[in-house]
Image 1 (cartoon, rainbow, N blue to C red):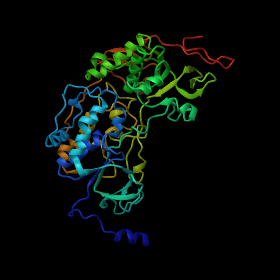
Image 2 (tube, rainbow, N blue to C red):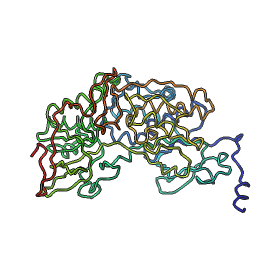
Image 3 (tube, rainbow, N blue to C red):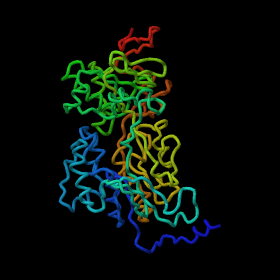
Image 4 (cartoon, rainbow, N blue to C red):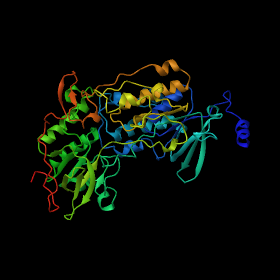
Amino acid sequence: MIESMLETAEVPMNHDAPQPPTVVIGAGPIGLAAAAHLLERGLEPMVLERGDRAGASVASWGHVRLFSRWSELVDPAARQLLSGHGWVEPDASHYPTGAEWVDEYLRPLADALGEHVHYGATVTGVARQGRDRVVDSGREDQPFTVHVRDADGRARRVTASAVVDASGTWTLPNPLGSDGYAADGEREPDVAAHVAYRVPDVSTADDVARFGGKRTAVVGSGHSALTALVALASLAEKVPGTKAVWVLRRGAVGNAFGGGDADQLPARGALGLRARDAVTAGHIEVVTGFRTQAVECTGSGTLALVGEDGRRVDGLDEVVGLTGFRPDHTIMSELRLRLDDRLEAPIGLAPLIDPNVHSCGTVYPHGAGELAHDEQGVYVVGMKAYGRAPTFLALTGYEQVRSVAAALAGDHESASRVELTLPETGVCGGAGLFDDPDATTTGADGEAVGGCCAPAVPQLVQIGAPSSSGGACGPTGC
C-alpha cells in the first residue's frame, strides 16, 4: 500500500514544458547523422561518446578502404549542416579509407554539432525515471534517466525525452569458437598474444613484423576476412614465406568471394575477385567445413586450431578472427526491448536480415516502424540494430535515423516513407545456409550456380585427423 501511494504521488512529466534532449549514444557515423536529423527536426540532441573524439571506432580500422564511395557515405542532413560551416565535400566518386572518413567527414560533422557532442561520457545504463523494467504504473509518463560515467570516473545522470542507441558493435567481436563462446585456450595469455580480431595493416612496420614471413590463419567468411586475405596476399608478394590459411565453417567456398561483377557496389565485388586471385596464385590455402573448438600452443612454438571433428590446422604463427560482431544490450537491461532471440536485433527488423533466410544481399530499407520496441521513445540504430547479422551499409543507418527523427518529431507519414534503394550484392542465399550441403546458391539473375556441395574455385587443402601418436597430418596431406 505504501509503495502504491508513493507511485501515484509522483509527478508525471509535463508534456507542455520544454522537453529534455534526445540522448544519442555514440559519435560514430550513424550517431552523428542522428543528431543532424534531430536538429533538422527542431529537436535537441545530446550525443554521448565514450571516446575522446568522434569516429573513434572507425579510426581504429582507418587503414581499411571502404567499398562505398563518398556519395554513399555522407548523410543528407549532415551534408546540409556542414554546408553552413564551410565544409568542402570530397569527390563523390572516391573510395575513402576509414581514416579519411573520420578526418574529412566525421570530425568536421562533430565540430559542426558543437556543444551537442560530449566526449569521455560512457553510458552505463538507461531506464525510465524511477522505474525498473518490472514496474508498469506511470511508466509511459516518465522521461528516461541515462546513467553516465565521465572520463574522471565520476557518475552522473542525464534526463532524456528519448534515447537513440548508436553505440555499434565494434568493441565486441565474436570469438573463434564455433558455438559462440571462446575456443578452448583462446583467452590464455600465450595464445591470446597471437590472436587478433582486426584486419592487419601491412603498411605499418609492426604488422609487417608480426605477419611477414609467417603463417596466419584467417577465420571468417565476410568482407573483413576477404580484406585481411587480400592484405596478407599483398604482403606475401613483398616478404617471402608469408602464407595465409583461410578457415571456413562452410562445406565449400561457394559464393564466399561475393558477387564479383554482379555486385552493384563495384569495389565490394572487386574485393572478392582479388581474394579469389590470391587463392589461385597460391598465397592462400583454403580449409572448409572446419568448426574451431580449441587453439593450442604446440611444442614447436606454433599454434594449432583444433576442430570439433578432431581435424587440425597446424603450424600457425598468428590467428586473425573475423567472425563478425555482436551487440551488448546490457546498458538497456531495465528497458523493455523486443529483440529477436537469434539475432538480438529488433524483432520487427530481424526477418529482413536473418542470414538463415536472407537472399541476394538485399535488405529492404526500414525505419522507425521496424526498429520500435515496447518501450516507446527508445531506438537501437546502426550496426547495433543488426545484432549478429552481417552486411550493414552506412546508407541503411542513415535511412534508419532519418525515419526515427521523423517519428520522434511526430511526423509519422515521413517516418513510414521509404527514401532509399540499396545496392544488391549479386549473391543470393543466406550465410546461415552454407552449413547445409543441399543448399543451392543462385546468381544475380536467379539461375542456380551451385550450392555448398558445388566444386569450389580454388584447390582445397586437405586437413588430416590426428594420428595415433598424437601428431597430425600436415596442411598438404599425410
